[in-house]
Image (cartoon, rainbow, N blue to C red):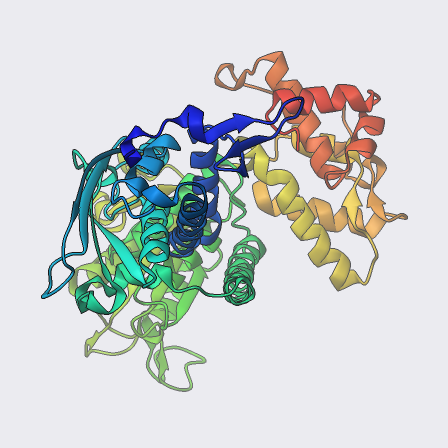
Length: 539
């Protein structure tokens, strides 16, 4: 009788009246290939390819060793048959053996060369990961190694030289005694090293701890960055503000002049600081001046500087902001307010990159970047003859439009909480949050004064509040009006979306406490969970 004559029916039977199945007098379990493939996928994703390959190779080795041991006991006359191992592989449903050639194992010749198809490991790897860049029949080569090592009484290791998991038509293997393998295959032989479970778990635990430490450090860096941005008024929860900040970061990479336009109080200076902080000029000064807050004469001396004796009170030579910025960024706020005469002087500086101090005849070279801001429409000012066209084009190489607060309502409550924390700490008041009613009125107010007005409202409320939460009666009179937000045709939302935004804003104001949210909304907790589930926020 030959090994190929063995049939599965002769080796496997079910113990009567039980759920036990025996194969060669050993209990076995039946698993479908997909479940084993999912286990393989879970191993790879949990501990990495290197560790998973080692575990599965050693598992296959132990399986092959035990199978050879049972074969020697159950069919000793077939134990030395070279086809016994491959045929056993096939009987177990692991693969279909194709070739199995014995060699001498001497003078560099392989001890065994073989091939198979229908590998369950290659099939499952392709299903879950696609084409691999290395052999993937890890437990199968391990099985062959364990089986032949037991049969020969020496360490025999199989290496897969071609694999269906790599796109090959068949899987091809070679076996040699351990000491006969060349150095170039050391990377595949390392997986047969029998590390103890304690050693594997110890190494894995340390790696996980290292990764956790790195993640915590990275999270802290991100938290610090977000905190820094939010303290600067750059809260970016809304799509409009995220777009503005992303644009600002792109602008920072180039050295062109910029005009930031937007309503009063939207945070134009803060976005200008962001542009400076992320530009190559970040290690140089950032100087800001409000052009509309000073007279033309004073603005000229502030920008250009003056020599001693140039006018009454000029007691010493003084550098202006164009010089003092020394390679940094000069922020000209309310640029639309400057006079025609000052426009000419600023245009010359932009063109020539040199200035003359008031009362001096000699020119001085200057290095700066201009970021200007305005709440006016400069194109209309040019059309009306109030702003020089050539200066307009010199300044507006790039224009960044800042959205008003009413167009970025997702930022209202995060900003309000930042201002509340700052004001309460400064005033040494223990005020931690807003009531849902107060939050509702903050959200539906139109905010003509934008972020600056919101900050003032919060400071007002902190000063008047008697409890630990800002309530509706603590807000200024204009916010105590019935909450009926004005909307344009473009802002009209479906009723379901309005309800969703309101529920989420109340949940946010309750710090994520669902029970408190349901109570404030006067709905059952089951109703709240159902609505959150429909928003994809069940967790």
